[in-house]
Image 1 (cartoon, rainbow, N blue to C red):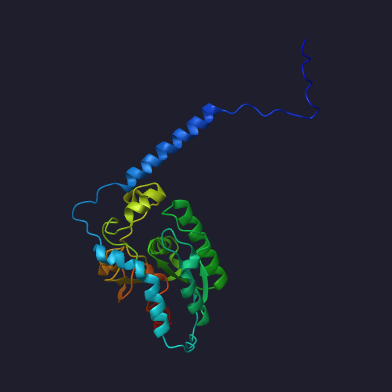
Image 2 (cartoon, rainbow, N blue to C red):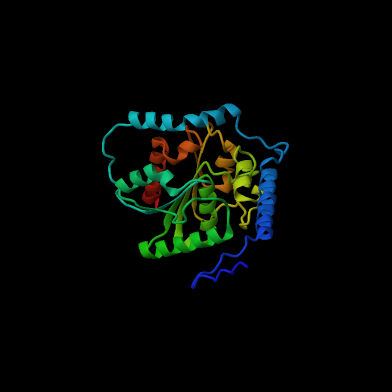
Length: 276
C-alpha cells in the first residue's frame, strides 16, 4: 500500500493556472487590437487633402539633409543673445525631447535657459498631460520670474497653444513648428498612425481644445511647402489664428533639428525681446 508523501515544511504548492482569466485577457487584447486596426483603416475624408506622396517619401532623406545643411553652416561661434529668455521645447507625436537636442544645445549656447516639457515621449493628446504641462509651465515661470517661450514641434505645438490659453500670464510667446492647428486634423499623412497608437480618433481627442483659436500671446507659426506629413495650410494657419507665419524650406521631420529652423526660432525669440 503506497504511503502518502508528507508535504515539505514551509513549501506552498503553486496554484493551478487560471486558464479562464488568461483567455479573458487574450480576448480583450484581440478586441483592442482590432479596434486600433479599424482606427488605422478609416477612409480619408473627401475634400481633405494631405501632402503629395513624393513629399512624404522625401521625409526619408531628412537626416542627410540636416547633416548637409549643418556642414554648410559656417563653423563659427554664434554671437550670444543680448537678452536671454526661458524657453521650453515640446516634442512632436511619438518622439522624445531628445529628438530636439540640437535645438536645445544651440539655444543654450546663445545664453537662453532651455528645458524640455518634462513629460517624456509625446504619445498623444491627453487632458491630464495638458494639466501637468500647465502646472510645470507656471512653476517654471515663477522660478524664472518671467513668462516662458514655448517652442512646439507638430503635436507639441498644439500642446503649446492650448497651454498658453490656460496660463497666458506664464507664457510670453508660442512658436509652432509644422503644427496642424488650422482646418481639418486629417489634412496630413499621420492621422491614421496617430489613431492606431493613441487609441482614439484624431477629431475626438480626450483633450478639450479649439485649435484654431489664437492664444492670447504672441504666436508664430513656422511652416514648409516641403512638409511631407502635415499640409502647409494647416501649419501656416489663417491670419486670425496666429500673429506671424514664416515659410521654411525643410521636411516635417527636419523642423526638430534643421539649422535654418533653429536660426529662425532664435531670431523670433530675440526679435521679440527687442520689440518689448
